[in-house]
Length: 275
Image 1 (cartoon, one colour):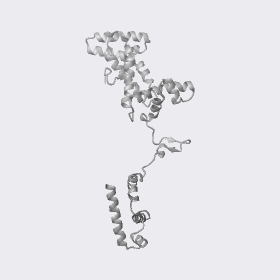
Image 2 (cartoon, one colour; image 1 turned 90 degrees about the vertical axis):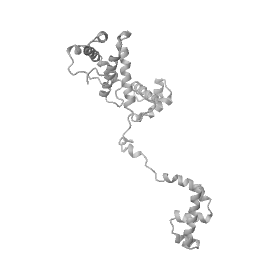
Image 3 (tube, one colour; image 1 turned 135 degrees about the vertical axis):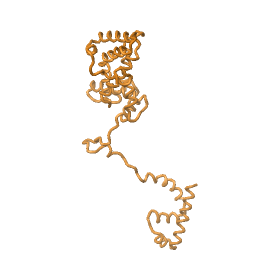
């Protein structure tokens, strides 16, 4: 892909001497060179020469793009990817800048590059996407927490972070609780004082009784409304797992009568449940 591509700029490996010297100039000289190159590109009739001039502006500001990318180091994305995204933003800034507006190129390029990096985080880096306000708050928290850690010599609390950001404590707490949306913890992550267990070991499993809970709740009032003998038959048959013959001996009836009684009881219960 060519260096003038807005989608993914690639700096030529064999930069010419003019470009190499451009990378070593100071800030003031760089601004002056960038203004001159951009004005020349705007007046240039040759598309090839225009691209050459814009490529020089890109090379001239690569350190700016890398510096902006470094601000987001340690947030779950490889720094190489962030630098590439920042270069995309730099290329967009170079191709979208209008010298006639009279503003400096950096005043336009820096927010464009930063916006591209932030867009990358919003669009590509969330395993579970929280609301936009939570995403923004997490970015602010990450920057504030690093500074507070150095100042306090320990990890800051949510209250300290909220005070530093002048933000509601509830918003900070919610953002901190959503950290796993960006970089979910592995189920093999060790937990506990000695790390003897993994996170997966602490997860619950499906309780088979939960699937029967609704039936139990619905049956309870129906069973309580049955005559005492009917409740006894159901209890002996389904809770004590007795055979019809054993139940018949206890009630002083035949096994066939118990069978008919059970069938009638279950039919009445079923009708009550359906009703």
